[in-house]
Structures are given as C-alpha cells and as structure tokens.
Length: 195
Picture 1 (cartoon, helix red, strand yellow):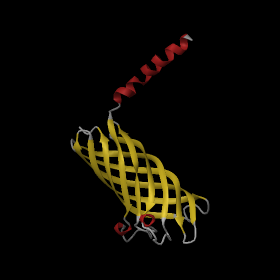
Picture 2: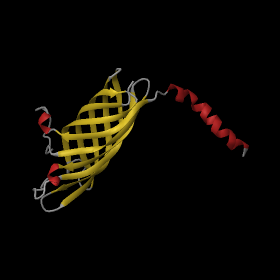
Picture 3: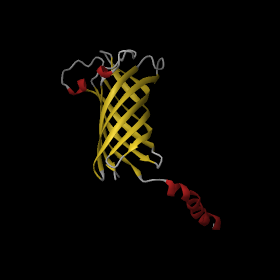
C-alpha cells in the first residue's frame, strides 16, 4: 500500500526533465484535400487517379523544441461523382484513412511556419467497377510540404502540397489490385498556439 502511494510521485519526478524539455507547440484542425494528377511530372509512373476524389478530415500534432512533429490524422475519401444524382459511378471511390503524422518544422517564424511532413495511414477504400463496389484494406504514404500562416495567436491557415501513394494490402495482390499515385493539394484551418 505504501509503495503504491510513492509510485505516482516517483513517476512524475522521473518524467520531470522530459516534461520541462517539451514545448507546448502544436495544433489541431480540419483538412481538405483533392487529387491533382495534372500536377504530376512527366517522368513519374502513370498516376491511376481520377482527379475527382476529395479528402475531408481532421488532424492534431505536437511540435517539440527541435521542431520534430508527431501526431495523427483521419480523413474520409469521397469521389465527387457520388454527389451528382444520376452520374456514372464507374471508377468512383469512397473510403477512409487514419494514421500518424511525423515531420520536421523547417521554419518556425513568428507568423509563418514551413513544415515537411509524412502521413502514414491504414484504412478501407471501395471502388465501383461499373457493376458493383469492391473493397480493400489499404495502406497510404503521403509526404507533403506545408506552409502555415497565423491569422491570430490561436488560429492559422495553411496550404499543403503532397504526393500520395495508396494501395491495397488485402484482399488480392498487394499494391497491384488497387494502386493510386497522385499529387494532393490540401488546405487546412488550425487552432493552437501560434505566437
């Protein structure tokens, strides 16, 4: 009993150097992105993206004193054709992804930040083949660069340019039955500490 009462203060004391070293930087917010296959350089492999898939979701992250970024994200994927009554849904995509965000803050300015990041995620995606929907468990890698501009001490707007690789790992042949490689243009509104 006596040992249990000492455990919490001992744990706090042991973690105190790490808590002091941590900086209360970071943010959370809403992310909107869209495929932009027309931005792909000609030397890249064929894209396999329609350019009509939108991403909408949320994120949160922390930034330490050295600028290391760590957090998480979740997005829904929705083909614009699904929003049009009577549209041909052949090739339409819907699904969701969630995972972790890691990165490095390259510029930590008073009002402007420049980040280099990587989203690593897992999720599920379905595609309409014209007759029926087929679904997959997918993995996603999305390196990106983000320019963040603080509009107040507690809110910022940002633009992101990334390149998403999304592929199936089950069922079927991994990263062959479904493989999408496309530039992504994203915009976000963030709430946090931007001083």
